[in-house]
Image: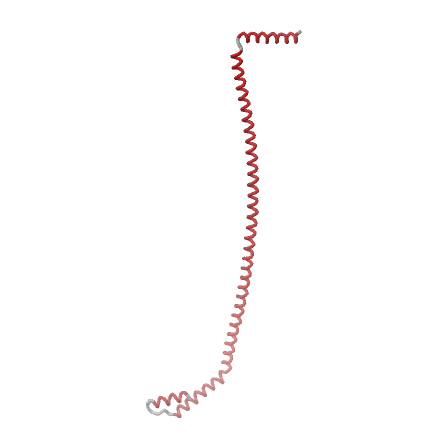
Length: 182
């Protein structure tokens, strides 16, 4: 019908001789018969092709849905693992902080023990040095006392005193010796 209107329009525009309407009608009938015949002959193949195409599209959609669900499950699994990793990381941080506190306390305790040991050692060293200094002072006082006594005796004792002390000593020795021999 559209073809007939197109031809009529072209004739009205002055395209030349009027179209042969019988020829147009026969051509249109032939065209419709050809379409009808092709539809009857190819209907099963067209249906099969359409059915195959629909099945392929359904299969592609099913595959796409399955892959999407698998991806979603994988995403959820990874998400839960990530949450687990975050919890484990938090636990590891807490454990590390606790361990660091224990280590700090142990280091402080060792430092206190070392300080006490060093203090005891220093006190012993001080006592030992003080005792040595006292002994050195006593020796020096004794030496000075003996030296001063020697000086006093040497200035106070005369040669007569020495002779008298010598003879007294000899007499004492003879008396003891005689008593021991006699």
